[in-house]
Length: 613
Image (cartoon, rainbow, N blue to C red; front, top):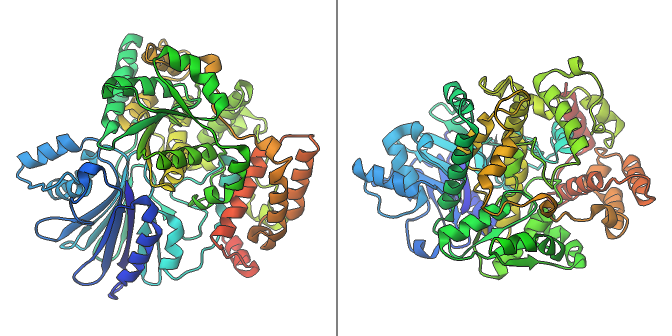
């Protein structure tokens, strides 16, 4: 794993490499073992990276990796899962690969295939590549968004990095809140690409790239999208249930094998996801030994112990005291590049901390993979009745059928906790899923559930689940991979018919059959650890919330309605309703703004609001 940082002049001025050095210093936790930078001959570009090395990689290629002629260089954050096969193919074509570094592979693949080289890379990665001869900068994110990449422009320059919060300083601009994104944050708990809550800072979406060439024209490019081949989707849907079961099992096992990689030792993290125990069992079989299996909390460990024992696994509980978790909330929040409202991220932060303290550099987990099938019941989903209602509302929103189906959405208005002026200005902002309506592939557009799964995969999974996992583990300089969020597996899952009336069993039933015998979690064993927010906001977090409401930047700037937010806390404390998750999302947002010293003065806020329609 690693970090990416760079600057490109959009004028004839030379960039200051000291700014890239400072960005790399702030990314040191992402790549503590090695770092470096390089500037182009004309001074227009400075590109740097830092990386975490496996023992076999120490002393290998420089950062950035450079070709023999010195005119193509690249840095990468992540791994190329098909590295061995691609290296062999490139050597047969005459390329001299001197090391096994992923960035060197990227350089030679680009030389061989041009911009089409991205289609030859499989894995979780973000990369930056500079072609000096063509004066071309390429930024790219992997198919499902396992690794993030941010960019921004201003003062005649463009800056990019693995973490968006370091860009304002690089461009000598204050960090500002993008108020237009608040409805999406409150509705979804995260903001999907290309947007962020930082005004003027964008992130690449999954399967997207950004090309800057002569003339400084920024050209966005979608280089991969699932279910884009209608003939393949039709062929998959024509298969029998037995074929689906076998194909899913092979794809799942291959995804795990591809991600075992060179990092050793490697552990498994299990939770309430139905696929997690199956993943751990398969890891053991492929490694030829039982992996270290981590689970958060003694309660979860006891609940999962019978199923784990039946599968021949031993569980290790990561079990901090509740006072420790609350006492170190600030560290967890500081690790968030963007505010993320999923409280389960606290559990992942502590697992990452345990791994770092135990000398465990890498782990595999199944977290989030079931979200590619939103019709499947899982512990991290709302109760079935509420889930069905949300599915109906989300599908209606996605497909523009709200008027035809009628009725109010089953979730409250996400804007009620903003000040009245903001509510009036933002009332016509589109609901988040509607952004994906035009991008749903035609092959699955008529299947409402498959369309929703596509939207969740492209948004919630990429910029909620995967972004959160990246932040929580990279904060401790350890890495986590999610094998069941493999592009080949997800592409297949999304092609399965999910609507009623299909002769084929529903996708969750097919997945269960594919995992049968591998240790799939069953019924009562599927409950993962979730912080008790309801109780916390009747105790220690209540005072922290009141302090934020009194002194927080967003309250003082008139973004969050102090009176409405405190009334919500009071209603929660007297037990009338459980507002734990909403209070948590507010507190995460407020603390994020404070930690990043976001500027939101009244005049600037008013100017920004005038642009919202």
